[in-house]
Length: 165
Image 1: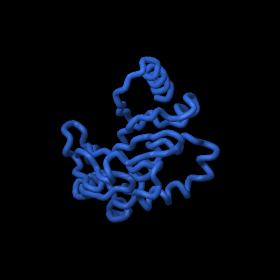
Image 2: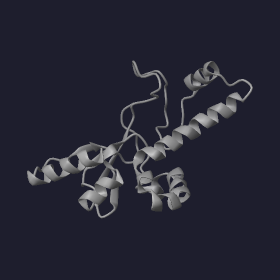
Image 3: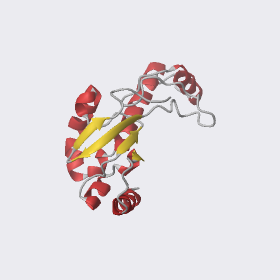
Image 4: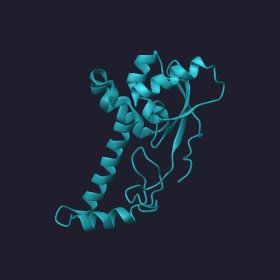
């Protein structure tokens, strides 16, 4: 997504469009920032808590502290999806631990996940698995929106609330 977001941002600026852009968090790849000199000043739709506002959520601050050494070598870990993948893995581990190793099977995990309504680490607080037609592994369509103001400054566009879902 990095090169596509860069091309769009450059083209968008060339036309001096005054409308505000709402973009997917996929555009928050460090390669975009490196290619443009900074992220575009857009509002980004994110399916998780933003690591760019570490004081907004205690888990985000802990995540950033845990990955600081890795992030220096691999900046892509700061993109939104590694954080959300880690939170999802922690949620799955929580359920697996509740089931127990001797009882763990695809059927017991499916039963546990269908009963689990949240919260999930870095994700929406209310989950209902199978509620989205055709996407049984999607627990919600809720998102957060974050506006990039430039120079490393962010604003929570949803005031700490989840939208949709």
